[in-house]
Amino acid sequence: MFLPEQPIRFEPIFRSYIWGGDRLASQLGKKPPGSGIWAESWEIVDHREGESVVSEGPLAGWTLRQLIESFPLEILGKDAPSERFPLLLKYLDCERVLSVQVHPNDEYGSKMVQPDRGKTEAWYVIEAVPGAKLYAGLKPGVDRQSLEKAVAEERTEDCLHVLYPKPGDCVYIPAGTLHALGEGLLVAEIQQASDCTFRLYDWNRVDKDGKPRQLHIEQALEVTDFESGPIQAVEKTVPLPNRARRLVECDKFALDEYDRAGTYEIQSNQWAIVTVPKGSASIRSQQETFEMSRGQSLLVPAACKDAILEVHEQSVVLVSTP
Image (cartoon, rainbow, N blue to C red; front, top):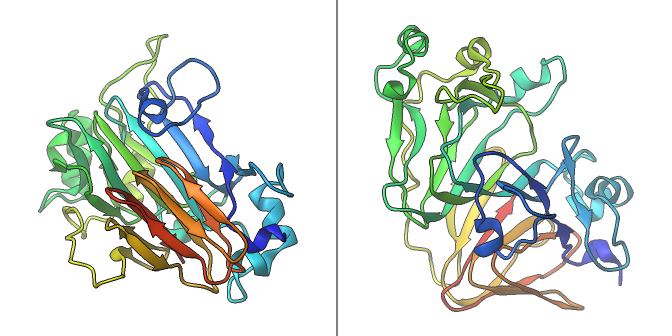
């Protein structure tokens, strides 16, 4: 078996933050490293802040970076440059509201002291407690001057557009969009593999020493898109028979939802990230079948020809592609 021609499993990378809960373990079957509060599970990533490691097979222990360096065509395909893997897939358990933040675009990120990609992302809501909300974009009419004034007067929330999401909702957050995930949300997130984040507001919270988190008000105001206005949940259409539902299509990635039991072809000659936020599924390649339970993820490399996805009853599978 030549591993880069087969779907690849990676060990999740866990992040601990004060706003996390226990649903990564209780709902998604994750096994965090010891006790504590675990807020994020990075499923597939190739970045200086985290590097996915192959969990099984002949190349167990290899990082995604090493795979791309050794097998660039097999992993990324012939039309992709040999560089870091462009996307990051994660699960987030928000027990408390996150900070209000914004991500720059690629041009701004490339000019930073420590250059990085910009960050466009999309959320898929898995669970939402009653009354849970998120913030996405600015209310109509909010410009830089009015937002800057609201921040100074600690009225930042007054400027933010509020959504009350339900399970199955998808929210697309282009670079430059002010946003915050709210308390009680469990989400899957696909994003550019970037660590560029500017915090505008953190709800006046302080740490155990009574100190607030660092804010980046000037940078946040500089990169915020004041023209885009409120962001709504993606309006879902009815998918064609034996086809996925396209949730997001932008210049950074496409995101498809498979929420009907059936058998589907995964497009060949390009890589794909597959994850199961609900239920179970399997992926069949020419040599092997890979079973996937809730919360599990796979990278299907470009060299994996004619991969078949089987979605089980009452399940949801998300597939991200270039």
